[in-house]
Image (cartoon, rainbow, N blue to C red; front, side, top):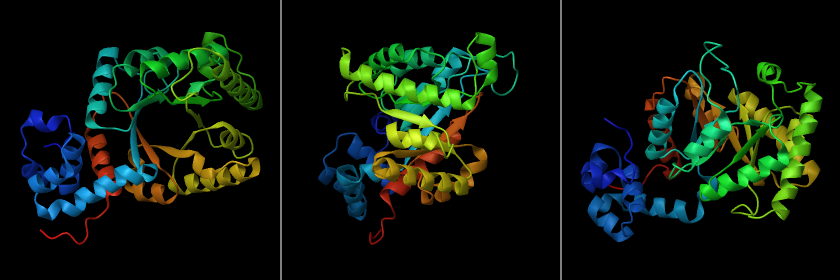
Length: 331
């Protein structure tokens, strides 16, 4: 049995609101019926008076608390799979209600058979981004080395418009030597790749102020991935709308504090940068620790064959975190 009912599935699956509440839980039922367009008073009536506090909490979160929401994203590794299987998993995850969907930017597999299939990241995103209905979409992350930044600004603008403003442009300096060598890109040094990343971001931001059409919000939100404390986090502090790093939670907390310090050094509000972290199966027991460390957006990485059972459990955890315990409600 599924752990989460998405609003679109409520009428399709034939559940009555009270059955939703008793079969699953009150917070999920309340959010589902409200998202489906019910009047709050009707939601309280149909779910029962014992759910009124939960409905009020949902409305309060939606009205004033969205910036503090915990988000769950999903990165589907576009390797060792077919496009048909990848598309199916992507669209199923969107229907489940994930907050974000991500691929990555490699030309060859990072894990498994080194000669196995690997889907090109930007084309995959361009095809599936427009088919996505709910989640934000993005690459986690594009290597700045592989595409002319002025051209990339135009590519990102069109995908931003095609997705109704749901694109997040994930960027990084690049690291996978095989991609560079086999496709003829100069690998250079880490310092050279980081300088290229910063220069590319500057070019894109400039193009977005001059070229037509412009992105939905005037610019495409930029996520920068990496944890280098002397250079990468300075670039994040200056240019990023989102930052991505890895665990464990203690390491993430340390990097998060360094980023805060860089924000103060460059005159940026640390709160302006959304903190995201990639988690894998070994990190699942530490979800609360990541949140305490400052993570606002946890992105679960899944490999082929894709199993969305863990994603459903993460979404249930997210919903409980965001609504909070309904203390004071009587059954």
